[in-house]
Amino acid sequence: MKSIHRATMLAVGAVAVMTVQGASHAAAAAGAWPSKPIRLVVPFSAGGANDLMARAAAEGASKALGQPIIVDNKPGAGTTLGADVVAKSAPDGYTFLVSAAGVISNGMIKKTMPYKDEALVPVAMIGLAPSVIVVPADAPYDNLKDFIAASRKTPNGFHWSTAGTGSTPHFVEGLLETKYGAKLDVVPYKSGSESITAVLGSQVEATSEASIVVLPYLKSGKLKALADTWTQRISAYPDLKTATEQGFPDIKIAHWAGVHAPRGTPDAILDKMAAAVDTAMKNATTVERLKGMGIEPIGGTRASFVKFVSEERARLGSVVKATGMKED
Image 1: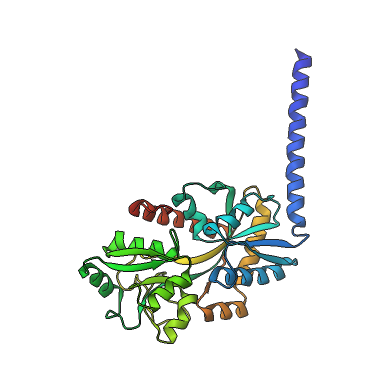
Image 2 (image 1 turned 180 degrees about the horizontal axis):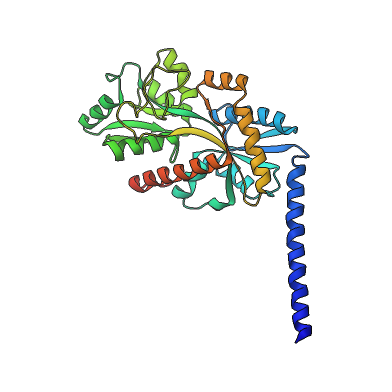
């Protein structure tokens, strides 16, 4: 019996030593990170709001970390193509995803997903471009209240273009209908640019799109803005009131960009990456450049982004449930 007890104690001791050694190795790896270039997968085409935010974050974080950050555009399948690449990458701190609302909502509306939601973990907030509700320049209403009232009076409601099922404009439409009784008929397009073109040509009555996309049309008088759908006014277009200021506090949504990592990436690396992104988003030159385009730099801690993602999941989930939103 004494021999068995001694063997058991030796085995437990060996496991304890292995555990300590494993933790030490993980800590050492995190301490040495990064020792080579980092890959930042962007699940959007080059030139859009998320891509621009990604490149600004990559530039600033690269300086803070002392290693190149390579932006790799992998658009397709409503962001799931790029997200899947990252979800299945080694959790070693050398592959990250530039995340957006689709990382949260895709699993709610798609029939099948190539990866599980928990395969990706929040790291850092980069910034956001408030969604702006726009109508043709000659539309007979100038604010959100009049627009909603007019949609109710129209027999078949207003046509509302989106950038596809589950896009931010689709969620804005869902909030307007379920929370405030707007009468809207969704017309899905393949992209935000096609959706905006439909409004410019008066093929539909309205849509919402990222501030960076619509600002040139607003400043040239080709479109009329009814509301900013975020909680604060757009720095580059401060005269536009938010939906909350107009009495519609549930219209709270934006085109945001953050950073997610494969689950299992050491916490020390995640914290270091979050701090680097935060530093990038507080750089005066970067702030001025992004705000001038209609993008609001955010940054912050990893904990603050985890909180944001949790709240966003609850908010978007309630819209999906209320509207019955599903993949086409």
